[in-house]
Image (tube, rainbow, N blue to C red; front, side):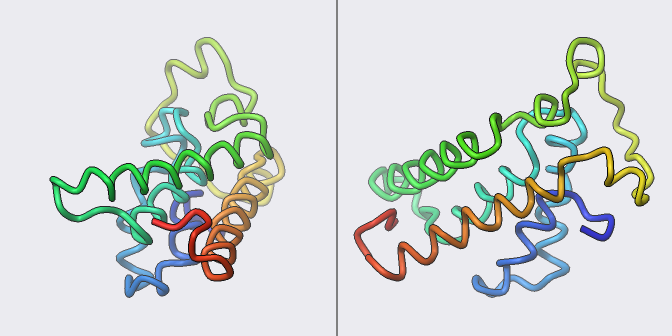
Length: 149
């Protein structure tokens, strides 16, 4: 992860498939770190999946309800898969935080050291998210009707 947030790591891994350069991918995903701005809400790796689905098949016309529904369907399928694999979609729950820690998380990012990563499941969640999205792409490639937007 090299100091990047979970969402940055997931989005940057696939951004080139959508013509998004590495720098822009990291900027787009930057605010989702720490469960959205370190508020410990939806996991950044999961936010990365949502961002990538938008890049892959997000509707671009406001009136395109069918396209919007198709995108939401893929998001829901992949997030259900992530929740089944990881036990939660919520950053605080994945980190084992509760009560005060969960509700009052600071906006200050912790230093990214070897010790920091030893205490966090983040690398495993990023890997899981990347595998889930790669699996979606492979299924879509192999069977255009499966999970297709």
